[in-house]
Image (cartoon, rainbow, N blue to C red):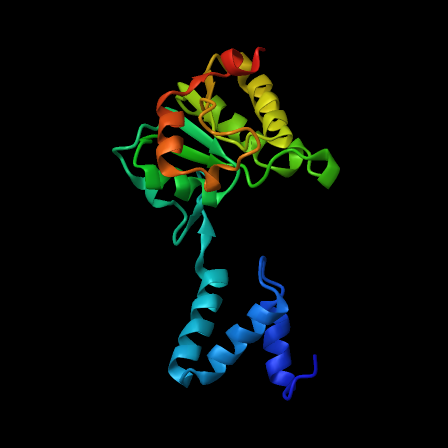
Length: 205
């Protein structure tokens, strides 16, 4: 498509790099910004700059935060002996929305996927094992996608923490096979956490 402005084209090209945004949607975004007043556009630009420069990873759980420690890890009412292991921050948000979990989290930042070149060393399994070794952890809940990659990661984690005697459980199969946590409805997710089962009972190991 020929654009009447190189600046318009540049913005469209940047929007089109976002996941799920095609060229038509990118054009709509760009034209909307063009119609907005300068103050609103500046606010959007500054918000994006702040997102990249100010948002940090929590030093405990690796969720996102505005400080070195996220709100969940700072909350003294949370059960710090219970860790819910998730793939990404979207899963933390989904579980928190259920208001059914009172422990803390550990965000892996991915799952083991040899096809994509992602091994155990590329995600935060080592950091999880270090937490188990140093902290008084009683139970780990594996809340990972019910996919081959998610199951592979669960098996690896279970094997990695076995010597510490910590209880390892997984979400009950109210979460359908092949589902990502972030797309599971809140009621099903809450029940799956509440009715979690020992890892070995689900996976037969």
